[in-house]
Image (spheres, rainbow, N blue to C red):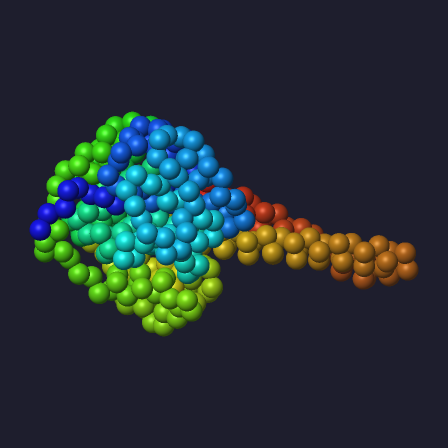
Length: 336
């Protein structure tokens, strides 16, 4: 059997991604024979203004996705803050399942669900963003005979996501945003075979998990390793893929390689800030005790508290240097 074209387009972006999204939708025609589902990394407390911005960008109607809403050609469905957006049985589904790569919404759940639901009828586009959310999903899209394209990294404010997606799918086309719109149009109008679809039990189980009202993952597939989840501190399992590994805990928090490294850096930095606060508090206590001993003429106690102050101050300075180093390394990773 054949389909008239790829009628499910999934798009992911993060830092520096709003302007490319606007350009992309401005260049798409009103009669696009495909639905467009968009994920942009936004904080949980963010608003849904992105849908309004994209609605004004071009002729396609854009709106926040509604749970169980049928997905139709010529429409843009935008992920809501703090909800994963998925595609299931031709409908948009919203899920407050575990964070993926440190985000909700995240690209990987949407891309994997589109691969399962639409197969060869799905096409994925990855725009500007840091780290590598979407790479695993692009791999799934290609494995299910869909198509993948990324924004040309020379045009990206933050090329991390497109570079990671292209590394996961070497056949992905890298194009400027305006040319990506033409690529989407061609994909939507080029017939594709829907026979011999790929079945992936592990991915079906993972996507189904997000669709449950009260998900409980239990032990995921993969090898139990000596890592802990940066989000919940639970045990981590490594799932080895063709190009890279994915890390998932029993709760369902999932991490790519780069997002795991970044999250661990954040956890270490938070721990160092706690240590800094405790040492600063210790310095204040020791200073108060030393001054009290001086007022009472207690020479031995004064000398003891002064020595303790000096040791605590040295420890504080050392930890401040470590904290600064962790912060700089994290910034360097984000810029890549």
